Amino acid sequence: MASLHPSSKILSILGLLPIALASEGSFFVIQGDPLVIERVDPFLSAGVPSNHVHNIFGADKFSANLDYDTMQQSTCNTFGPKDDNSNYWYPGWYFHDPKNGSFELVPTHLEIYYHLDPAPGYRQEFPPGFRMISGDAMTRTVEPDNIAQKSNNFICHGATDNNGNTIPDVKGSPGFADGGFTFCGAYPGYSGEIWFPFCWDGINEFEASDPYAHVTFPTNTDGSPNTGKCPDTHSTPLPQLFMEFHHDLDLFKGRYTQQDQPFVLAMGDPTGLGNHADFHNGWKKGVLQDAMKVVDPATNRTALNVGDSHPASDYFTNFYPEDVYKKCTIDPIVQEDAVGMAQRLWWAEMEIRHRWSQEAKAHEDGGTARSGGGLDREIRLHRHRVDKVCGSPPRKERQQRRQLEKRASSLESDGTAWQ
Image (cartoon, rainbow, N blue to C red):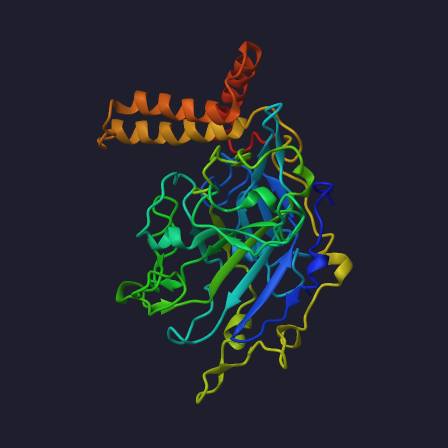
């Protein structure tokens, strides 16, 4: 099995088990380190390299062409429960060194909360192979009334000031800017938080052409992503996932100041507003449904009723040994340095070109061109934005960029050209 980032580590300092305890409610928590870090996304780039790097977790049958039956053949996962052959992924976070312009992947660790309570109506387990995304990789502006954006936040755990004094957790709104990350340190450190939609239309599956159509958030008066009833258009409630991506900033102490904003998502996003996560269900059929079975109608208590007296680890007893799930990794498919230092986020620039080429094709097929000077002007603005983040490349690196663009084109046209 492949080795990962040398700083990758389990959140042992938190004292959490692979299935953690919770104080109340019907939910359980799984957590682990990455299975692999690479440019693969079976949802939006099936069969070919993705346009940006992902931290990928879960079962070891992950691939660029992923289906439920194959997932059931997994021999390990990064969380422990043998019945969970799912995969989960989110974009890599990079430290952009203010002094030398290099990029380094920030070590990460994932916690996933499965909320099972029947409050929005009795939930149905995820259908086999169910797929969904929360967040939008292309978002760069704050939309205060957008419930999907409210599901995406950042928080700084255990921050310290310049004198080493602990300060309260800093809860940010969408985006990096006010997340208080400057003084975040080791795990759990600076964390991204994403709630997934849990209301399904009961019929349709994920479609790359419209990835958010089959699921939505509940309707309510406070605009929160985790309370309220499912709308009539999406009336089937599913378990709700809440992911928290912890990042260790200790490696970068002393290398940036409070005035710097040194972090960028793998898509070339310096705002953090494009943070997103993907879930591909691989749970063994019936396991989650049994866990959500209401055993006390008077209190709506479910079979898996997490609490101090009934931890989730008492319910899920079918586990891989610790030395298996903590060492569960796979070799990357795309052979490139996505983990170590890199002078440019090449894949981020490929992402922009790929997205705009899709829009150009749609325009040729009769779609409406964007206003404000047309497509060419928009492309130039996006290139300028990326160069502002990555630094304007010298002549030699521009030549390297053109070579990589040609390679990317060949990879997209030929799904077998991985190496």
